[in-house]
Length: 453
Image (cartoon, rainbow, N blue to C red):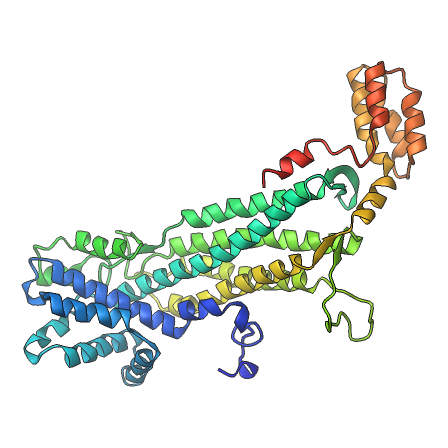
């Protein structure tokens, strides 16, 4: 594809940022996984002793295995060529496999060809192919997610002791450390990633309305539930025994919602870093030749975090819609899920692009410790909290109100705060401890907590 003519930036401008997903979520990726499912079912039928007509010897089994392992783009192109006649994508796969096996098997064994897609509805093949796509796509995302969370955790440990003025409601608040705030994000991302890992994709292989009707009409003595479960588990999936014609997609909705939650944590982080850059807490390394503004030469914009935020919004919009839509199907089957499922890779693609943008942005950041120290020193009023807390401890009258009168809505310098402390009738040890405090040292357990990232 000429990227300049791509409609979606996933296949154009950003294609190199999510190239691993092309094999998974492309039309080729779907067809290849349909082939894998069809041949896994054929081998399962051949292994069932009571289905004598579908026996495969060792040489024939090897041919089937090679057909699955060696399937390539030329084969997918042949499937699409067949589809132009059938106007049915899954039937085209069935005819392709019959065509290929007819070439490799002796004519006397061609009876086996009719066991390709035996007793299956298209959704038996499609739901498993989609589940395999999601399984493989999730592996790509999880690797990128872990890379980002690991990078943030490493930054948290490196800056565990660097004090920073916190801001609640956008206003100066009790100090923290840079590392501890980064550690919060790392922990949140890891928690949501664990929820993603917990999910195993469901699949069904039980016929046109989920009852094994056709299967039992041909071989009533076969334990079809058990055989189907064996195939499903062999592909790393989990059997859903109660379905209509389609697998319910509840598992897909759970996965998309879990990814959306992970993405929302990253949006929160992107916006916070953007603010810290705006406040001067982080500087951005300049890159030779890069331009920040077409008219203002001085600008170094936090574009990677902005890019990430925008792409995460797109990812969550797509996956959020799919999570709500896919759980709904009229009666035993309608086709609204089919066109919807073809967009699974869109949500994954925008997520991967966003992750890599954030990673790139983090690589440009440098702590501006002088700016951090300056902001702390300009806000001695944040020590009103520890002072009034100690006053409460010793039973002094109106401690909160007295500090409110001194500090609320105004800047207070070091001299003013220390003179106030000196005027208090506090125990010697308490007074000495408060007089030692500065905004930069009033960070509680922040440094220790940063190590939990």
